[in-house]
Length: 141
Image (cartoon, rainbow, N blue to C red; front, side, top):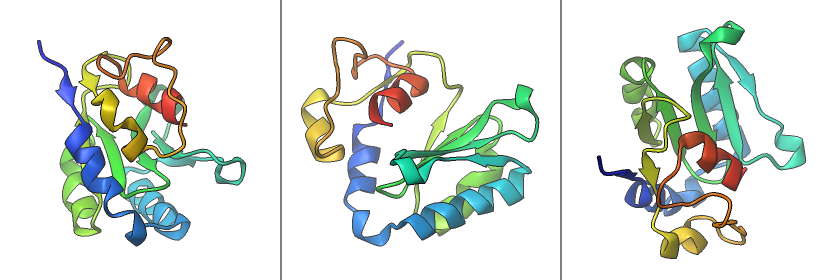
């Protein structure tokens, strides 16, 4: 099975950085929380680059994660069907993910400096060409 290449989706969202702000991240997170009855987990004050929306109860896991510096949300099954349209209407690039632990995703290594300016990605620890969403989160938080 070929990994799902996220490069073009991330580049598309990165190109819309000027439309994004902390207020928009919070508004988007609140929209998801309202629709899915979830809860926000985001430490913006310490520079965390992903806002996580968790399920109502501990066992439900993540509903979605939202990038703080460009309009991109990774939404997990089974929430994708109820969130995609609302998020896309808000100008957010939506990535569908089955779960956060299966290594099924990739990003072109040569595009990392464009997508994540200033980030030091430790490719010896997390391979951007074969990773899970959780790996992506850790590498770019």
